[in-house]
Image (cartoon, rainbow, N blue to C red; front, side, top):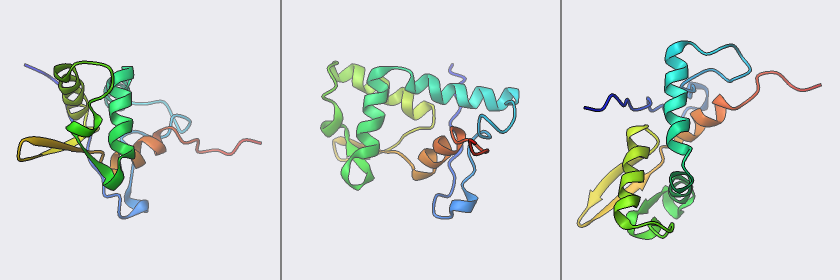
Amino acid sequence: MSNTQALPLLDADVPEAVAPCCPPLTERPFTADEAETAARMFKALGDPVRLRLFSAVASHEGGEACVCDISDVGVSQPTVSHHLKKLKEAGLLTSERRGTWVYYRVEPSVLAAMGKLLTSTSSAS
């Protein structure tokens, strides 16, 4: 049994309403729950193949990509499927089956939340 938990998705249409999963790193120390959430996300992205797949989906025209369009990352198709599953479990990707193909999407709110996490709250002098 897996104890993975998906990151909460946020409404990206309202920029003021997009809150990161955790506060910016420079705002205050993380709570234990915030650290678990951020670690799950970074662990999923800590593999070069997963990072390439995430980047391929995020940058694909239309904001979504068929697995058939992004699987050329130097590993076998079953390994691609494994890595995509890990990205989904971390809440970084969503998917939809259409016929025989699966299409993956990075929710805009996830990218916004990741950006806010790494944003400094104070300006450098």
